[in-house]
Length: 252
Length: 255
Image (cartoon, rainbow over all chains, first blue to last red; front, side, top):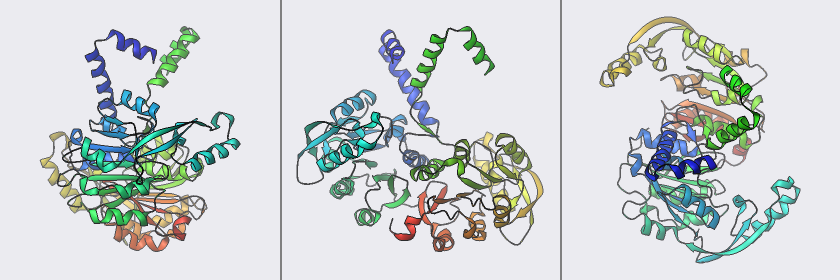
């Protein structure tokens, strides 16, 4: 980091930015790289490429973005020139997202999953275990007592976070065509959040196919009734996620 | 490598260590994929998800082509798995033997009908090699619209033996039933999958079984054959179908 920040200090800002962009563009052009858990991002990028989409026109919405790069479903698209909105309740991670992904809009809030508009958020030792559910937080803390000492989890803090409805975020920050890709990764509330999403707000008549990626804690039989009426078909079940795709004319 | 060890011998250790740390930091936490559209990551992901020892995974790659580039099995090979590579082109088979010494390379085609030998049409780019004259002519004709450096011609015609897939699995893997079957054969994928005896594939319920086949036919046609054997559609990439069988699926088909 020190070499990088030294270089950044001595180089003109525009040159440093250009170097950063060149590196990201190189990563994206090198077709065979993935950041998400099991290659979901690469499958989606491959489909967008196959349809000949202008990748800089692609917009995404990442609900529960967490780390800007590691296990991110949207970083590969960001590298390819796309941008969008990242919803992340943890303030530290939201700050990290703002630093690492300046083109994106970062919303430091949770996605509303019921009628509440704010909720208590339990921050754990490792932020991947952060949760809105006290039960889940105490269970992880309890379970981790048997894990390796370096992996013990404690509830570090409880903070009050606002909850914003996904549809309002889309209307406010992605007006017009709406997102082409929505990723939902929220440790337990994915089905409740998916139920709140108005899929008609996603790209209606464009040539870009629409994608929806959701953690597989939700069952296919619950997701199907939500997505079928909007023309979404399941195209992948990875070890962690369902991926759905919609396109005006199917290439079969 | 020699250059590297020379530098290592003349630079003080702290400098060398700092250089290594800087290099590691520069490396992005990404996963490499060698298949066309991340198919290998999806497949490896399932094995990892169930905590399988990757060095015990066995695969069959029908139409292996290049040992690394666009290979559906190289990522598994790197992780310690091994298996059988079936490749009709003698030059590619030689390349496969050199680059993937742990694998068994069968220099033949897989039988897709009652014939036991056929003419292989070798194209400018070996990825387009095919047993079908019509397919070879179609590729050559349509490539006239492509960029000049991508033009395809039939550069050779050789007779190669065709061996039934079941015989290959039984002979080379025997008791090590394969966990992953990849079929990439420019058009005859469905015909080959139809000849497969699913009993020869993995039966250990703690390890999932995956099949990756080129999407030259619809999922329904593949599932007509694979569905009764317990397989479900797991993914559709721009070029391939991936089917998966696991004991969980046998209990709850809705996943």
